[in-house]
Image (spheres, rainbow, N blue to C red):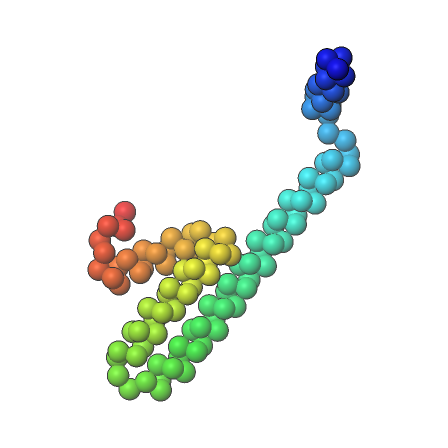
Length: 112
């Protein structure tokens, strides 16, 4: 029993010490490319959603006659965009939106 465990450990060490094969390098490169494509698509989706929100704001703000409605809509949109940015892995955008929401709320703790 002890012998087989030692053999397994030696085999594991051999595997870990081996140089990556061409196939391993290709897999790693393809994985990086896939990650890059996923990030690019998330950013693209977020930008499309943001443009759609801005276009809808133009329509809604022109229809609303008072200032309360647009402000409430803007705050609601910021909350939605903040959670969407975090979910899509856009931490920089989420941080910017967080600072904007803190300023709108009058919370000065978010200042740098």
